[in-house]
Image 1: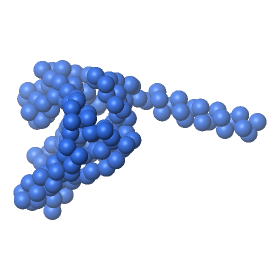
Image 2: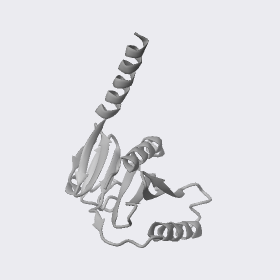
Image 3: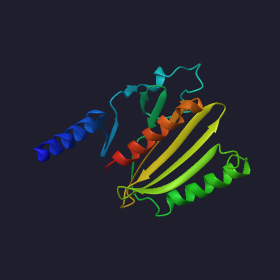
Image 4: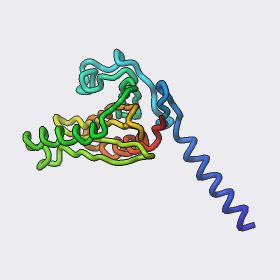
Length: 172
């Protein structure tokens, strides 16, 4: 009886996790988004909002509550081994010169997720939070990048969760 209850609890947990995510793909890239994500067209962004096409210059845009996820067209070809490391150094130097690092308005990180190298950069200015991210496959032959944009610092935790869940779900 105890075994049956354990299996039932595990089954319910697995089911609830999969119900909360929708599978999507762009070319060879597959990823999951929260179930409440709605795809919108770039021209449907409010031109009067602080969040507009200048902040989300991408073809694929999803809205999750008050947070926007934009995904660029994937790139397929040879990518330098240190591409993301170099990008991080350039961004870190640029933001350090402008005083963003000391004021906690900027962060960047390089990580490995599912054997893929990922780079994420966060900035907050003029009441707009923005993550920019890139993920490169283990063979350095494909890259996917994008942006998460949100108004108000109160959306930071949810935007960070969306970013982390998205990066973990990407497969090539």
